[in-house]
Length: 308
Ligand code: AMP
Image (cartoon, rainbow, N blue to C red):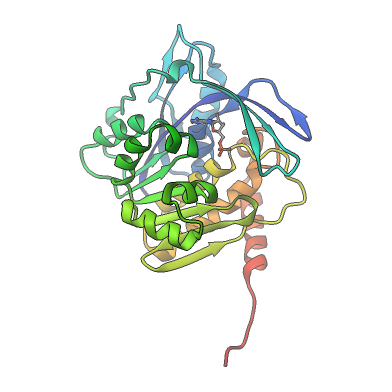
């Protein structure tokens, strides 16, 4: 079993969907990644920063899932990163209403000694210079480095982002971001171009339409489970990435065949995340529920066909 280090935001989110509205609740990319990866019983830790306004009970909750939070710096005088978003009726698109960087504006991540020997490194959505700083603090290259990013960093810090992309093994981005990064409309061509930028594995997330994994001329596709109710898509992409890397860390196997299973585990966990506001569903998820839904996944994708 591998040790997983996660870097990303730990945040307050205020979310509005067609079904309701929340005040400031727990959010952040690293929070979703950590909760998702924790389902595999691995040794994991988060590197992030929060303000004095961040409740200790949230840290306790993460600790109760065996997520090490000693790498989450608390700046008593500062305020926690705050993001607010409003979803459109289709739930596939959203407007960002507020992004207050607060303590994140001058964040210098420090990797605790006990995580400098991590086997798996998950670089969650953050400023590329923070992602690079974490890479540089790890003396021996991890077995696998996975990166998640978004259009915001492509628009504002492309050169720095490209430097990070050179150093990683797997990139997870959504379809629009893959098109923006590569300048190609076809996702097959986009993946080819992104391979040439560095990563041997390219994962393209297509929301309710599933996810694609590209590697060395091979493609694998996993659908998203058709759900009766989608309540709040916030964090689904991060939950997917957390499930993907968490499964790989728990099996210590980074073969293409195992990555296919990791994609299924990631999609499976993301399907729970969207059922309730914020992190609520991921905080209260049983192994039985996960297994039952995996069965549904199998049934959804299996078919018999005779080939001549
Ligand atoms: P997702 O729905 O997977 O895109 O992730 C949503 C999470 O990302 C929320 O919990 C936010 O706190 C966090 N987030 C929003 N904007 C940013 C940003 N610019 N950088 C890092 N994290 C962000």
